[in-house]
Length: 346
Image (cartoon, rainbow, N blue to C red; front, side, top):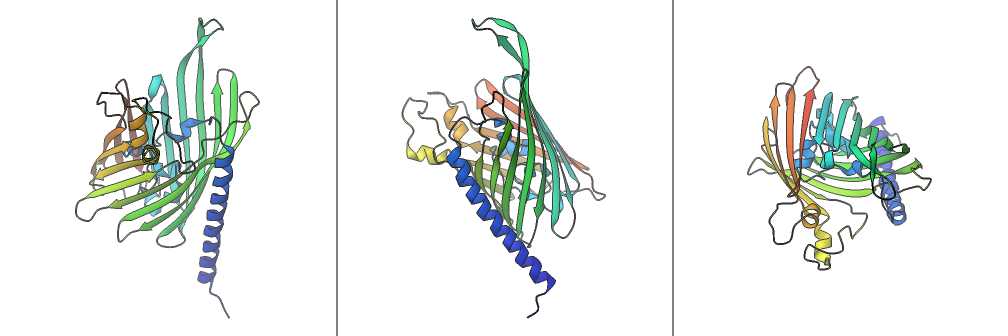
């Protein structure tokens, strides 16, 4: 019995998908079991773009020209992200600065790749002696340089993976590590819906600060995005940190022990984007965990809320997000995407 080249390719693709799923589930079990201490490199979980920040901070199922989402989930790469460049920057909390850059290339026949980088500077940090007296300042920073690959083996399915080289410096101390992301995305063009699962930040720290190896911030995220037919609105729901059930603080703002319902709710963030396929978008998001843990008793401070917009000007798209953390802590993030193809247009 003869088997065509196309059939062989599909069989190979299914075997690859099966292997990735099994490997990812196996890896998630090992890592979630082993990582019981404090994680290092938390900057890997900061929103990768102003758009992601505006949609609740965890969205991993937005599949369009926006290449920045591929930093978190490489399986979101697609033909529309070809030759797209995205740059994002923000003045983060406590005078720290954060930025990302990403670029994607489509190599035809379902093969796509991306390169990206993330940088976090924590500014000047006071240096104190054993008595608590200040003696100058020191600096700290984190850098991650990554590359990703995705393969769309059927019209509706894409698998992807990426590797990141991470280096961190605190004063004269340094550390480095390799981390990986692996994701699977289902995209139904007719129904305008996308579902993704991604295993993020698994890897190995081969050079620690003080000789004691630390855990990477491994997480498993599941996301779903759909553009509604009745109104031009894209709704995104993300369940994050699924590798562990209890990610909540022990007590709520009233000093009561957190119940099971709260522990489940803290895994979710939601986002909505009005006019998602137009040149101007309005975005709103809510992060349940951030809203619960940064709330102030007997005060309405809107912690957990985020909002933003995007506007297209010729080959450029400008995105802005305002994220509410606390009464005294808000973050403004801005991003610029550039269409480098010869036929610009979203």
